[in-house]
Length: 348
Image (cartoon, rainbow, N blue to C red):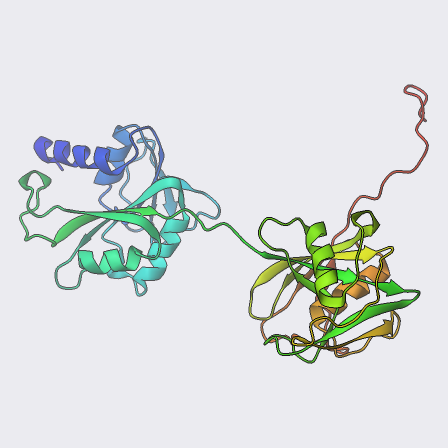
């Protein structure tokens, strides 16, 4: 870039690729330092990641240098408005993994700018666009080989820039379900699952999913009537505990366990097509063949716990295993302060 015309051409390109305001820019694979220095001259705060032996950023330029591998920048939790990678993908064993890692470093509404060659030994633009498809909301490819101002005289697709706008991270979403702890003295009602395709043959508390538009209390009242025919007044429901659970397949859900203080009607099996029967069990003599998630909830209820994690590991059984390591983790919470208050200025 010693030619002023070439330098002006690259500056114009960077203005189009990088944010139009002073931003945090990460430069990868820019050993000659021309592009990072040019980005700094445009007002950006530039960090360069290069192996020590290749770094060529002069001291006093304001460009921060971090020693490391461009494919896996050692930047912990730092995020940037733009990541600029020059001629890196062709050198790494797993280009898809490198792109994914770079995309993680981009802030929302930021962009990833990848300069590559598509000739022999390079990464064709179409191949790069395919690699970026799962990461990007959209990708723009700009050919550089036909523009004499860029200093390139190669054929189209030999040298190109891909501006990748990563898709915003997917929001975490979970199923919400409700579970009824229906007691008769020291006994609790359980139902044996059947013909559902999940945990069939195991005992579970009357339960179900919260439907769109429902609150958890309404869902519990509905499920109680649909499954076992009991009618519960909203005023007679109490939250026993809340549990976040992950199944062995990795899917997560949050369960609200309710206790009914009173109810009307006789508990019967109203869904014989997916329930093999209902039965009362002593709380201190629960059956072993229960759904592990439900068993953890009832055990937490008996212990007086209010907030619990139940995080299955891959390969864990859906059913409760008495001698297997427990997965329930109790989350502490603040108990209400029931001490009598003292007048201000009279506290010791």
